[in-house]
Amino acid sequence: MQKLMIIGAASLVLAVAGSATPSLSQGLEFRIGPDGMRLRERCDPRYEDCYDRRSYRRRGCDPDDALDKAERMGIDRVRVVAVGNRTIRVRGRDEYGERVTIVFGRERGCPVLDY
View (cartoon, rainbow, N blue to C red):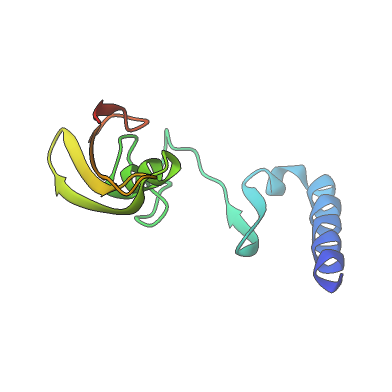
């Protein structure tokens, strides 16, 4: 309850401050997420480098994305076997205990190339 009141108070303060000085508040961004409340400066990627190394993600499929997709497909004990320029090979066990190898493409969305 206390956390909810703090979030509400912080959002009220930002709303009042934002309406009083619109030119100053245009460059700020207020986010509420699993890691708490954050206030950060917004930037325009056309004119400046907005991404730090931790928040920047490629648009393609990385090994973590492939593992997540394999787990969503119902594969247990998933592990990455091989990572290439165009494919990611993952092994695990299906619901019957049989060994399964899945090959994902490195494109966006991790398309299944071989199951």
